[in-house]
Image (cartoon, rainbow, N blue to C red):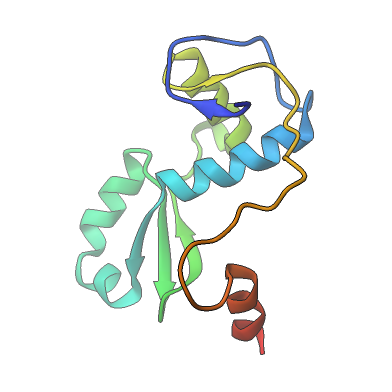
Length: 128
């Protein structure tokens, strides 16, 4: 399977060489590495969350379950590292790997298990 997985294999791919891959990986990285905290919890423990952000953690702030902001440390030297740069660092440290192939999603949808609306139906309903 093509994609990002844990492991120690490295690749020579750099940002911009495969835009579709980086869009998928960027989404994966943001979802898997960000802590979420509600506004009330953030206000109650602000100092703790500021320390965590200074240490490099990104914290998503939510209001009623919806993300409204991201708390992160200011970049040193005035430059913000892109997600692609962060992912390359993870790859260079051997924490993730990539097959080197372009991401091509399979043409067939994945069948869902269970009852109820699909994710896209829930998004459409939420936007009404």
